[in-house]
Image (tube, rainbow, N blue to C red; front, side, top):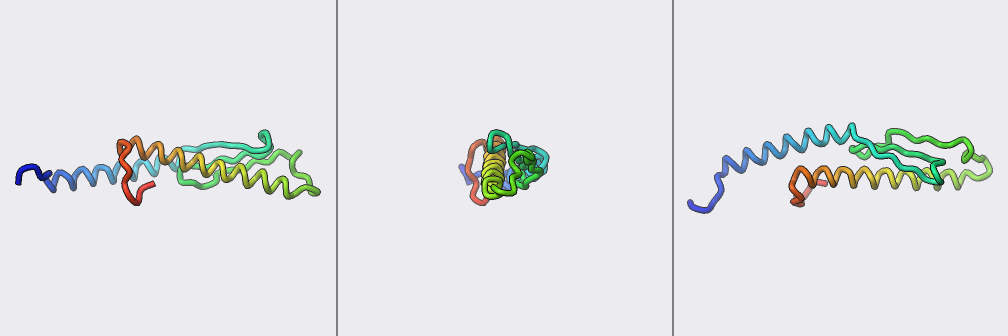
Length: 106
């Protein structure tokens, strides 16, 4: 039939895209983003798998009388790190797919 793409060709392209995505996911696990809160008092590093890799807390902010402030700073830094990690993944996926939004893919 004229005008219909070759099904074998489509399947091959889909398989290639799947392989590229698997490789990208592996690479993203090695890429990190870092953020901080409280003027650098709490620093958080997250990877492209959206896992927290490290948390550093300046001893000056560890005040037993103000644990709530420390909790707020950690929460803010963790949430920002995860947001930045999602953004990084989204940008890398957009490069791979040419900006096409594929359902079920970040």
